[in-house]
Image (cartoon, rainbow, N blue to C red; front, side, top):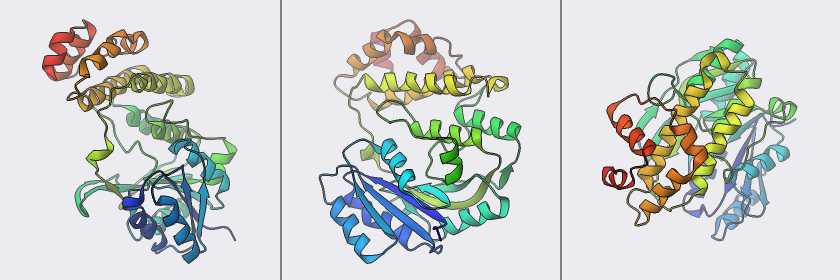
Length: 327
């Protein structure tokens, strides 16, 4: 009999936290699972750790591929998985002990194609913030469309509703296979998890939200880089294009373009803040001003507070000196 859930973990140079991650899966109260550890060309001791666990527990499968990136390794994992449901776990994070049992029980109770749980931000093994979803069932196309739209961005205010990552959820494998749902590479698109989640939701007949905290997300400032790169700007516009291409008609009654412009603006602002202390930060600002595609999207943004109003007009008027001073 196939396992109830296949947990897919792409790994790249993750030896520092990998054993905690693996323990959190193998010690689940739901025992009928499999764990797919996919090494993406690590140069540290990650692969050795994976092999050691495969010898200890026959539920563990280990694969080793080239350095192709997390998104494509997840696609590889889905092809190899035998479980009824698929879960994606990041190699530096953990599950709560009963996470998979709670999510699977909800899936069985509601016959859901996708079940999402709450998550907690964790630093030094202490929970610093909880993100709860509430107990809800989305059992109509209109309900699903509304949640999808708010996940992209609120229409009239800052931010979005929900978790854009895939690791808070389990997904019915047959739905993924039947609809050929695959990750795009994170090297080509920004927030590939968001796009994947939207694709799953658009094909689902029923989605269940569970209010329990099931996932422990490690807050790790070292994972954020301040490296200057034009590729991030292209990946932001690629996300805009992909969502328009796939969902413009599906979400037309929810003002998709305005929501996407909002997301593009606050994603750009987030990246500006990340690189604000780099010695080459002016180079990055010039890249923004010279990126016609990105500027064409951003200038249609409608500022919703004073800070965004200032940033918007500094970008629109390409005021490099004042932009540099502001940040």
